Length: 359
Image (tube, rainbow, N blue to C red):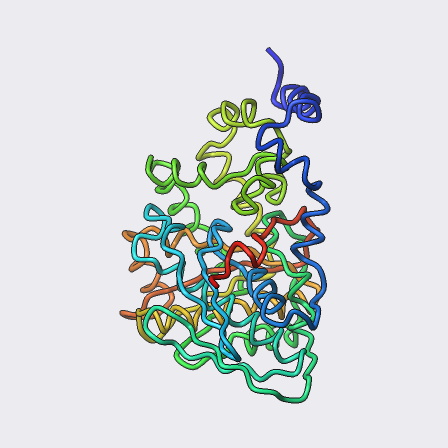
């Protein structure tokens, strides 16, 4: 019987000739061309379209891109796209509103570089952002928007200097949001225990697994057909035809294998940051998203990588235990991220503004 390496090598040999997905989308552009289009540097015009494009480069759950933008005059509105809900992993839409907050932060930073002061206000389910002319204000965080990525790989294990940790913590400052930075190895090991317990629970949850797999894009053609989802090579996995990759999932995407991977990734990280809001409502979840996005951009500006390890906050039965260990009392831990020095991985795609903007 062929071993895993031989089997994967054979499958990789097939992938160049038999990639699944949409032939029409694949013929329109290559994956690399689509990446360059999604992540191109910010242009001054058309203003609204460019600001929306940069907003969509924000972190978001499962790369579902759960947002709808509208632009009228000098006001841009971001609303949730409930057709992109993930009820198994996110039954109360918490991640949707965190994602909207991430997008709003990108838009605010991008607008400032073009000479517009952006004032976001939460109005029910929406974020309403009024633009006012101002002097252009470049920043390292804005420059990092088109470079940032969530890197789901092992890191170098290099500790972060105290000055770096202060900058990361300062980036998370947002009214109503607290940041807990963990770098001590015993505490990191405890976080790892919670991540593994949460991961095991999720992998035993059939609804969660069906939902997760529905958002995986196993190869370039699949990703091009939807311009969303979890691109397999962006997590360090090979690009495979879906008819090969889906059966392989049952063989290699296992609880023990994933737990081993997460343990190695956390052991190699410089630290973990947990974000927690003072209250658990949409406005505070959006605030968490803004802090979360600034953390990712600051890490990027400092030459670091980061990735989400949200299992302890996604598994409802585990979340209160995690909160108690963190000393949060009744507050909900919202987001958990690890960070460190790591490699570049292939980028995921974003839907273009024409597909996320309402007229």
